[in-house]
Image (cartoon, rainbow, N blue to C red; front, side, top):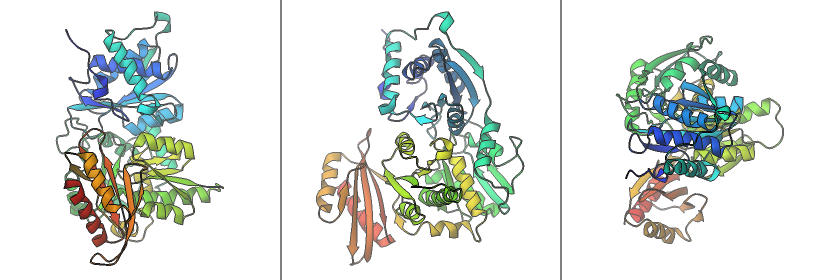
Length: 478
């Protein structure tokens, strides 16, 4: 007897992410489409669904639409698009949306990112568990139960790329920046479609003073050149070489669904997402102040970003709101606080003007706008926002995570302040010695799904950061 799949095995905290064929099938996706409509009470309403360039994405989109139509939703198929475009439609039109993508994962994977009307995130705590359980019930019962014929939904198609590009251009004016040469690595992902529309004339918009040198703009879900995950240093190598070869002012790299953007300077060196977050935060605070916005202004950052991020926010008179890691969580905090901007260490950037959703392209526009009037190279601008030394995220496989956790707590009790907002964060000072005097912080977070501890550390100087990093890694790996 054939058993139905266990959806909890591949429905994660913030999205669906599974292997095509063994976990994600047309039947599973159809059930998820029906469950999405049921959970959000979207029968009789419009919803949008889009997909990336993976081979399985168009078929899954059709299956999802079948399930949604069967439960009474009027589905608008956006076709090929970036995740940002689905957020745009959801926010502008006030409708729920789903995006088929596995972001930076290999070609054997696909997934779904859901949002409620207004681009509000859907996590296990805010509806995803209900979608999972409803879909599981449909599968266990043998399939989706369709509504009567007079209550079925409908299916239409839309192309929103031109509207999306025009909206971003309205938010950030690049027409007066100095001429810049920019290498863009789309990684064969959706940036290959959105970059020509937003930064070029592909959507019928006026030309900008930008010369774009494309790398891997051909949409190809097999990722023939490298994985579309710029967070991995190896995947930035081609961009770094091209920036230096062409004498470009900077380089941009997008992940598979083009919702994250990474930056390299004219020397080919990465600009940290924290530096980008600090630059954009300053711009956004100064912009709304200049527009006459009175009262408190909030900017969100997760606890892994560099200390320069809250320092920059507070230096321009705004409140820095520290949060846990996770895009759906941060979207919720953006809405709760009315924050104008949010930044993560992972290069997710969130904007009030984009309905609190993340948009890597919009962050790139802000960076280009700031750099386009800056008198100097990007490496100098980035250095102004990278005054401290950071370890980056270091993952360690350990046999006994709780025991490693306890060793760290025992070693730093009395030496550092400890808070438990997300994992444990330790903040302390060095008064002298071989590493010198200064401050440090580090965060350790256990993985929810693997026997891992994740370490991020930062210090006021490189020797301090390295001393703390090495001590903590020894405790983790003892």
